[in-house]
Image 1 (cartoon, rainbow, N blue to C red):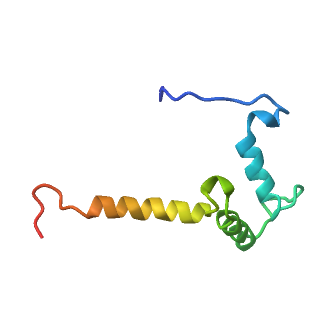
Image 2 (tube, rainbow, N blue to C red):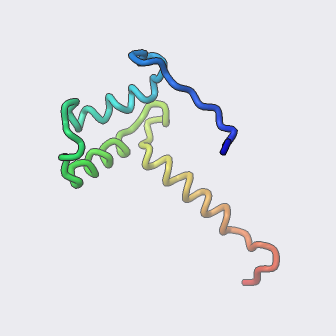
Image 3 (spheres, rainbow, N blue to C red):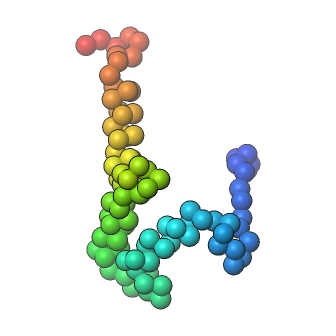
Length: 91
């Protein structure tokens, strides 16, 4: 089945082809050392690492955190979609 989605595969050992991923991996390495066996990592520690990652301000997000940006977009969407009554709907 074709989804008509363009995909891109980076060449092996070519980190310059995937800067965003390399940046994300570098950020996660602050909390989880390179040789860590992820299957043995306690769930609580993994969740704390993810929370720290999502609550670190980013220059590209105007020094907001990914969590802040996501919440603002979701809340904005909810406000937009629930602020008006749909046709046929009464108060």
